[in-house]
Length: 254
Image (cartoon, rainbow, N blue to C red; front, side, top):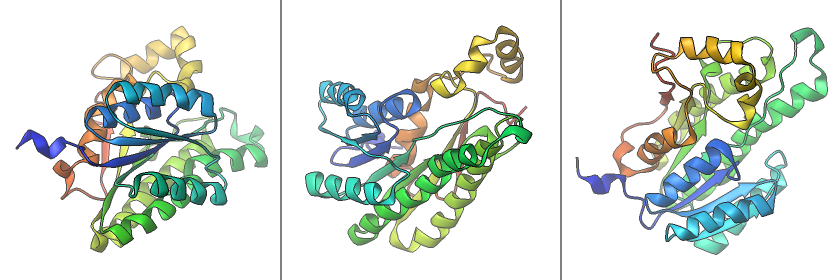
């Protein structure tokens, strides 16, 4: 397979949740493969630091502060991106939150907060960018699923429900938008070293038990998603759609 199938030269990628963690790591991976970047998060100063990193890789970066739980702000950020670059070829919906609580204590507001960010925002971001991709004749959408898309974990009910929804949403959009040459896939990270899972890593016993479940014997790092996101964003995956690519160190296989 020619290596240029993985090149993103001339492409524009929009990544939500790009200021830190997995979102930042995937944004830098896409820039490293040649894409100009639209970086989205709630906080502009953090995005500007990532934009500087993108610039060092020789690519252009447009940081946009936006709340992806607000449809009007989603539409405005997409409009800014198109006005600035002229097109959007790749979307990565990486913004996410989690709240750990016993099910009997979970409040309505906490449920809404998690589902709004982790599922509702994913759909409306896909919708807004999908309209652009339909007009321009195609594109690549990459949602971020989770091991909880495949199985349940206690104390994170809203997160499990939302990530389960992301898996089904990905399949539904893949089927509906295939005639427009839009590939819709998801990446399913396993146990990664991120702010969302910091509590687990600080607990030596929980950390030890989790590592025992990972055949490769370690937690994932943001760099471990680079190959997966470049593959799904590039021409190398043109015949792949509706798929969840698990990057989990072998957890599901075991």
